[in-house]
Image 1 (cartoon, helix red, strand yellow):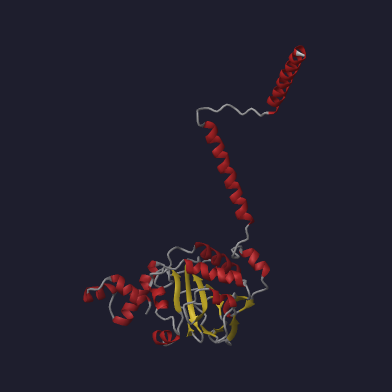
Image 2 (tube, one colour):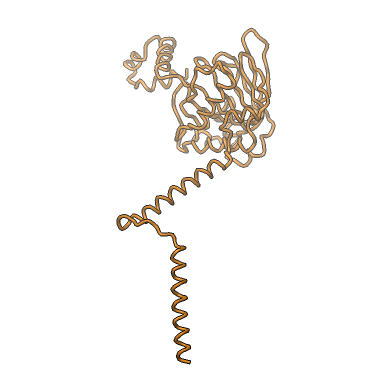
Length: 321
């Protein structure tokens, strides 16, 4: 029996040796690391690269909340309607989810401490709005580089919207291709509010996005028949507002359902977002000098010397005259 056990032990030892050799042959031998931390560093680098690749693939696969691809947007829309003086109206360009996302994204750019936001908060009730805005004019919401005053109430440049609007305006109105959009002005309207017939003097082409309640847009070209169109939430208008007389009036019709789920500052029912090229500093200064001579009969420098006020004060005053 002892002899049998000895043979059994030798057999088991031999079998264990064979299994060990087979296991070793299946193990992948990694290259020797150089330095004590090289292997860990190499593995971390590979992990970060893999994570970046996954994040990039995920970003490409995720649907965009807004149609920043202008070519794709135009393909899904019908033919734009023709407006006077080369203008175009793109009906139903934005879906309701895209309208809401745009409105809220613009709001996220606002500075809560700005004068614009303070004015909106001061007129939250219909009574306060009527007292503070007797003409029922549109009220500033968020502004980046005002086309005349070159001021901003936004905390950051809305680059993604500016570049999108620039591409879309050029596609709809090739005559505007020499301009570069760098200004955004979002305004809020109450029911029945609007703008009387006017011309955006010293400015040129622009692109306007309607959000919220319906509005009537009147094109009033000199010496030609007026054109009146109804703008609905998601419609886009491109026109040479600096040469085309126009007017806007907001209807009493209720806004789309998404409007009730966002911050609209009391009685406001419509938002209009207008993109265009702002006046340059040199052009702004030139216009202010002309207005100073026309209104006061003297230059800005003479006004400063006479009143003791800073030049910036007169520039701000005259640019809005």
